[in-house]
Length: 513
Image 1: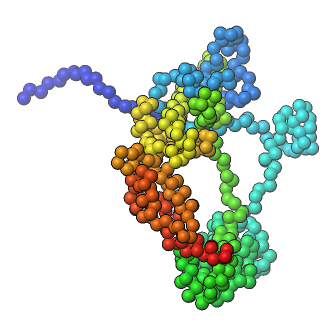
Image 2: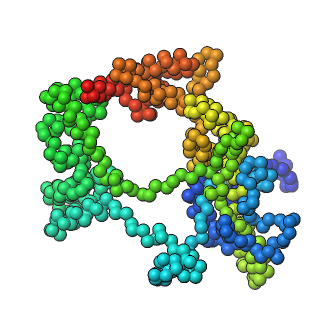
Image 3: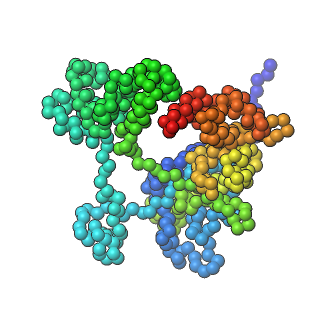
């Protein structure tokens, strides 16, 4: 066989995931808060990017940006104030060279923060001064002076330090209090605390009793039964019968009052009073102190009814990023670059800024496309309610707008739509399909769950429906569903079985009588 050298030219295609493309894909599935943090980081890192606010003037001087009616908008300002945010207007403006490349969620618009003031005075605090504001001509941020909310640990520790004087006991108590979870329960075992501190279990339990004597009543309990016991003792309602009831909480959860009456040795009236006492207790006493501050959900898309009874879908400009590329500043520093390293740095910043603005632009376009298609297919839901929610999957939307399923999945992650029927996550509209009876249409799983809940809510003590009865009613209304599916949906809604519901309704009827 002859061996020889030769040159060949081949042509092939391959997908290359550039760092910019990877960044665009990553940004798309971030939440609004996470994207805001990312853009904030980019604004600090890249000197060519600037944040645009509602009251901001043009970044470039008027003589450099052009004047007159035919003047072009500033380069990089992909969302000027006079631009409409409906689908038709934004598609006419946006560049389509990045189709199927989808960046992150848009950050919430943030006002430029006032620079820190070295000290406070009556003038800076009250806002009296030049321009009627604090130092620097800006009003002080009053939220900076709001007192920090007291945590559960601090509240209990302050009481415990008054009850315990021994230094060792205080150390043990501090360790126990530090181990409280948000609900007020002791998350760490007594044995682990004793081993870690090198003290006896008996002494740790004695200190725990001091902790449990603090407010809120029930704090420091190791389980639900102990938490309820501490509260009943504080109410002077703990007796041997109540102790037996607390030892059999699973029976109480199943509403098996006949078995509980037999174990406790009480009649029906006494059992009803005991159950009422239990209902008045707080199973999670620590939650009244709250936890992390609740972040309100801000919709990315707004849907409202147009005068011609169609649906108007538009982006929420409050959460769209306001990022501008300062071309004038880029030209100035490029002209004064003294060496190759500086020129390379400016070029990298310019490329990064251009890519970020284009990615945010393409993200807005993609979210609007997906939201508009969802609204078009779920029109019956918006008009008539959840019973008319149609089955929908990602592939259906992807095929309709000419994108990949993974793109639609990223777009709908952590994105919310505000509709006349409420605020919903985009993924809420994608539900499994349940077959209808022969000749009928398919039904959305969410709509079927809603029907099951309506049936159970309409029950009385004499008309409690079993899972088989619910299946039959659904089949009569055109839904072909199995009994195990009904049981799964019922459990997902945290609705007890028909036996437990019958016991609860009968007990309620007897108390009312």
